Each structure stands twice: as structure tokens, then as C-alpha cells.
Image (cartoon, rainbow, N blue to C red; front, side, top):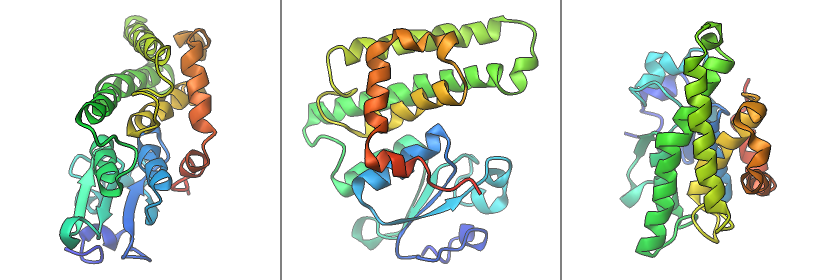
Length: 232
């Protein structure tokens, strides 16, 4: 199935169907893929999927039945196939393999990068996200302090894991910037700048982690990717 033939194109038509199509919104999960695409130099076209409801439409679910951003359609997949993919971690691995960038070629290095990528997918993202629910969204109306406290404590524990690692390495999986970093630092930024979690998480006490965040944010490709797709 080509890009034009995919049902998602009825809602988000491709102006450049020869390019990889990104369907996303600039959340910590969403910008992982736009940053990776910018870092890797892959031509792409971005479509804004508003998380106020677009992700639940039939058109979007034709691409991702789980109804979550981001998702991609790549018309230039292996052997010229058209690849559809969702889940940000899976997309990062696919793009790294496609481009040959931001993931080591040796087995140990690759496994280490994937290890830290899964750390974000299974720990950092879910815990930070649950904290956000109980501090910024509907969960803040719950009077019982225990749910929020649970996610504060676990988030601080995970930050301590990052801090310990970054005392030994420049980037999270070693001396080289990788897709593991692209998975992790947007969540650090989101916790600090969107969830306003600095005080609850005592983020300033994790000095290496916060310095690492600033190092990542200074990259030109990151600065471009953080703005893709536009919110409107």
C-alpha cells in the first residue's frame, strides 16, 4: 500500500508522498521522532495530530490501532516496501537501522543503547507521565496524596539512576549520542518545563543530569525537531 492509498491520507493528505510521513504532536514522545529525523537527515513530511481528539479518529487508528502518537509511513522501506510503524521506541530503532546513525554497530554497544531506550519506555516516561496526571491534569483534583507521592518518589529514584550513569559517561549509553538520549532527554525537559516538577523531583540536585539535558538541547537538530510538527 502506498502513502496515497493508506486510509490516513484521507485525513492528512501527503503533499510529498515520496517522503517519510510523520503523524505526531510535540509531546516528549512525539518529538523523539522529529528530533531523530532531523539528526539523521531523513527527508520527511510532518502532520499535526492534535491529542485533544485527532488520535482517536478512525483515520488515525487505521495507522495506529492503539490511538497514540507518533506514527510513521515510510514509502522507502527495505526493498522498496512501504513501512507503517507506531510506538516511539520501535520507530527510533527502525530509523537508526535505516540511516545507520545514532546506534552502534557492535553487539555490545547496540545492546547498551537498547537497554537505556527500554529504561525510558518502561520507566522514565510512564512514571513522569503519571506524575503529570496527578500534578497538572485531572488527577490533581484527587485529595488523597498517596498517588502523586508514589510517582514523585519513583521519578526521583529514576533520576538517581540517570545521575549515577552520567557520572561515568558523557551520554547515557556511553561516549556517543544515540537514540537512547533522544528517548530520554525530552522527558527531562517535559518534567521540568511542562509539568513544573523541578521542586517535587529536586531536579537541581541531579547536577550531571541537568547539565546533560542542556547539552542535548543545544544541538541544532534538537532545536529544530522540538518544533515539529507545529501545534496548529
